[in-house]
Image (cartoon, rainbow, N blue to C red; front, top):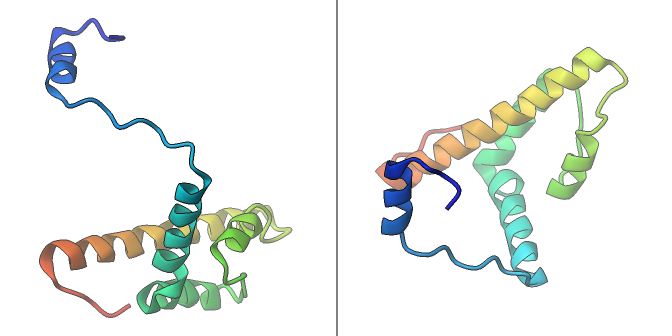
Length: 111
């Protein structure tokens, strides 16, 4: 064990062993397809993302992988790049928060 703290050592001993990391390529593909669905194929998610993109007059790609590449350099203006990245993170947070609210309380709100 890496920690010398007795409480952390006790907690580690009480926890079940971790599942081994999978080296399967298919597992990774499933995770990426799931992200595409959660963030951009869902009506709520695309409405949130589109709302912010319209405000800054941008038309980013629709595919999750393409958006990640696009976020690397969405504009030549460095200030706008930072704002767009904040918008992306804020959108992801809003979508995640709504998803958790729906799962844990069965309450859904409009975008």
